[in-house]
Image 1 (cartoon, helix red, strand yellow):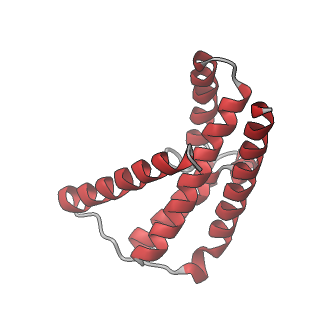
Image 2 (cartoon, one colour):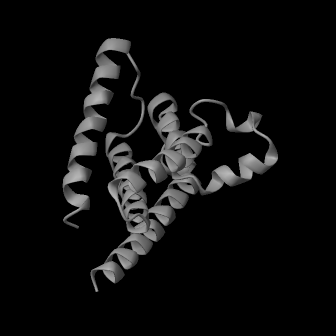
Length: 149
């Protein structure tokens, strides 16, 4: 928790700062529920931090962490649907993108911000995001504890 707490607060502040800037400067509509958005975003932040901790358990030096992060982050971003629609990807990559938490988060954020949908519509992506966060934090915590022994 000592590793996750400060980063979690920092990322949540950055999220709402960027949301405020996009609302004020670009008139981005916010049609959904703020509480639902906050809960989903918090879940994604925990999942992302857990991935970072997991990466750090595999690396021996800071340089290795940076290299592993680059080779992990780029595919996750490319398979998220942020740069190219998932429907336009080959079937193999579409299936592989299902294990990408960023894909689910982007789908949820688009639905909440632009469409104003509720949990009744986004629950499959939300469930996948929660499952990924739980599994990632469990694996990273287990590996981290084993390194302390």
